[in-house]
Length: 577
Image (cartoon, rainbow, N blue to C red; front, side, top):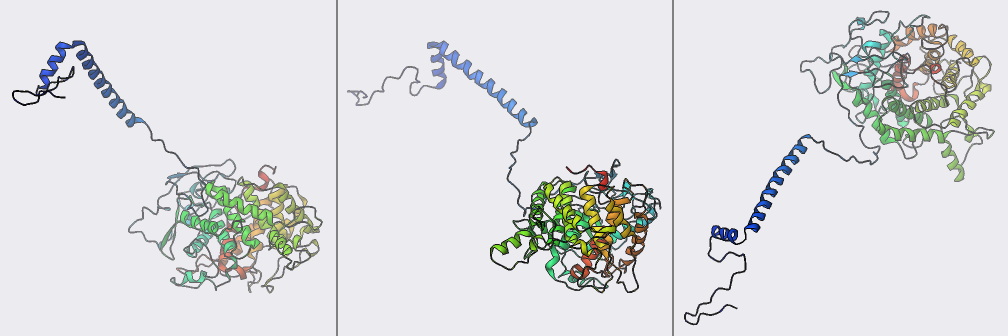
């Protein structure tokens, strides 16, 4: 307690604590007193202050130097991507490496004049101008100037994305029995026009639809392309159209663009393919099927084939899961053999649907569980073959079952039945029975299935079947009833594989005459009406156009003309495991 001053009545200050500064004393006075009374304490404090200041300077210098040189560490989430997620964009590339054919692999420079990026449009560009000069390549296929059609092959075109089990690139002379009987400027020009037609008729959502397709022609002059058809086959038609672009080496990663002079529009091909793939992925159900109402095996096989080839060409991770799910559906859909000996072939309806009807007491035919046909089975085999080449999982017993069914429908002389051996060569009835029926149709399908599964060039059935096909070369009768694009596609693929330019067999006994006839007939059937919406499409119907119309006809004929480079030769690869 403060003591009072009895005389003045003021309170005296308390005694100061040791080391404290007396009230009213200046700091300098206190410092001097502290140094005189406790010199070692003052010196110690001063040294500590100096040391701390030096360490602070060093730390700050090192901290900023680290910030200038060190990278930034980013944690990337491993969350799975959903099927709804957009396919990833990739950076622009100037040099691309084409998909190699055997040992030939060349680096091709991106030609700005032919494929201008969408981000760099020319303000005075005339999009109605025809791009490419078919005479820029010599007849023998030796490149002159970079150019040709907007596609081209070999050193000047077909900018593939990366090495892949699909596609071989070689420009040839087209006709004759020579080993160079490959793609020509005429076939490549037809492919270009066909792809332009498909670009013009793709819907805004990425699909190709038979029921709305005529509306795509509304704003363009010229002949309408087709009547409106049922939407039941839209998933299969979208897959087929995508295969036409994939067969030319164009994927969702491509950097090329393609100009359609009819619509005066430039398309970025990656966007076209990406939109189609995304539409299929959005369409896919949890069980792996695609058809809107109930699975239909033609649709499922074609959509699966498109996803598998897109995955095989690019290796894009987001495609792997939906492609594998689609493959798993086809495997589960396989019928059982009549003897109960294992897997068999496929037809329109998937096995789980039939088994579900049986459990629910519904009506089921006596043979529905083992009902299969050569046509659907061949499409499924092509899809599963592509899956296998792409590194997706396909059980060996699934291929064994498909071969067991194909063996069961083969008759003597290379003829093949549609469902039974006893019907080999007989007409497969349908909506257009007034068209000519080609008895080798099922033989071509069976050839492809056997070659891609067994890879046996010495298989005696193959030569027997090749004779059947070569005896019925493509021709267009005056009434057009001889036209059969479906038969021509599978026969072209089968004979190209059997003794075409890349086959290990000597000579082109069957391929040469077939290839000449096919080019002579198929290309003139393509519409070439100048500045018309129909330009580039195949509008003349064939026996099977009643379901898919011009989309089916155009896509399948483009695939026929891509046969020279779409697949590597089946006999050249290693045998299956």
